[in-house]
Image (cartoon, rainbow, N blue to C red; front, top):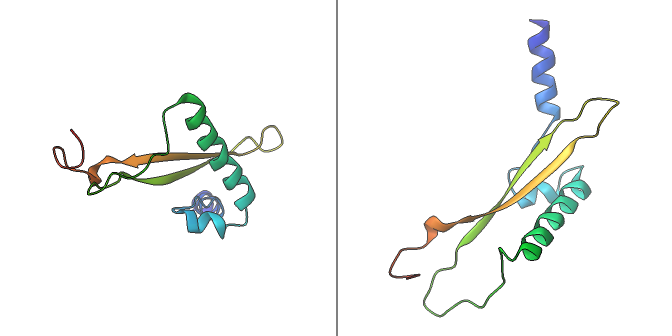
Length: 99
């Protein structure tokens, strides 16, 4: 029973944001924002994401940030903040929004 209590407490302390608003209001917001900037620069550098104008009459693919906190070994390595920007392609219809 004691082990369960410690595990639950650790999970409560390790809060992973669910949205950008939670990142901004998080006490570790600087770490999350730096991770988000790294992800965006990586996407630009690899050419996998380009900012473009919206064609008239077409829906845009929306996106969402996913956040994960990987705990390090105490005293050996720090926690790793991970942020991924994912496209939500289900917001478009084939033949209408793209060919």
